[in-house]
Image (cartoon, rainbow, N blue to C red; front, top):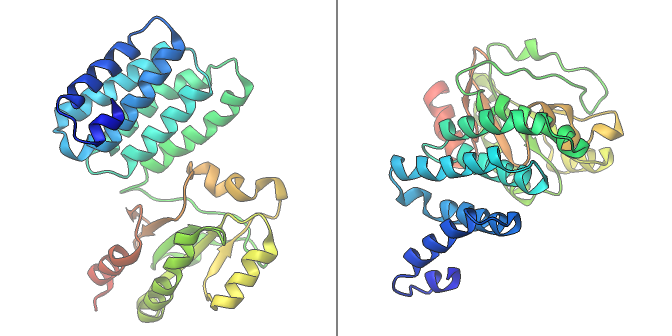
Length: 272
C-alpha cells in the first residue's frame, strides 16, 4: 500500500490509513510496532499538508502509544525521531514539548538500564526545545586546554556551532561562516564551535587547514567525546549541524541559523 500510494494508485491513501489504524489497534505488540512505524512515516510525509487539527490527531496517537506500551528501544527511538522532526518544522515545537512531557516519565521509570541511561538525552532535548527566548548555558574546555569563560561573550551576537570533521554539511557551511565572521566580527559577531569529533588531532588539523579563527570546545575526557560531549548531552543534540544564535543579551533567537538564515539574522541585528 505504501508503494501504491507513492505511485499515485487511486484510493491507496485511504486503504493505507485504514491498514495503519488496524495495525496500531492490533493485539500483537509487533504488529502495533509496524503500524506505528508507518503512522510516523506518514506524518513526516504529510505534515505540511495537514491543518493543526490533523497534526494534533497524529501526535495524540503517538502519545497514546508511548504511554500504553511497555518501554523499550523501539518506543524510545520512535520518540526521539518524532521529537526531532517536530522541533524543526513549522508549528511542531509545542507538540514536541507535549510528547516529551508525556513520554519522559515513562522512560525515567523503565526497568531497562539502557533506556534509563538514555533518558538523559530526552531530558536534554526538552531543555533544548525550551531554549528559544531564554538564556543558554555554555561551559567546558577549549581545544587549547583552557576553560571557557562564557561571560567574555556578553554583549556579542554569538553563533554556537555544533560540528565535526566527519559531518559533510558542517564542512560545507564553513566558507559561509568565515565570510560572515569577516564581515561582522568588528561589529560584535562571534562564533563558538563545539566539536563532536573523537580524535583531537583531526579537529585541530581541520581548524588549521581552514584557518578558523574562533574558539572551539573539545572534551578532554575521551569518554565524553563525540555525542557524549557534555554540551551535546545537556541539550540533547542528536544531529548536526546545529547552529544556535544568541543575541547580545545572551538570549537564544534562532535554533538553526545557517546559510542564508544566518546572514539575514545578522543583517537584522548588526546592519549591512
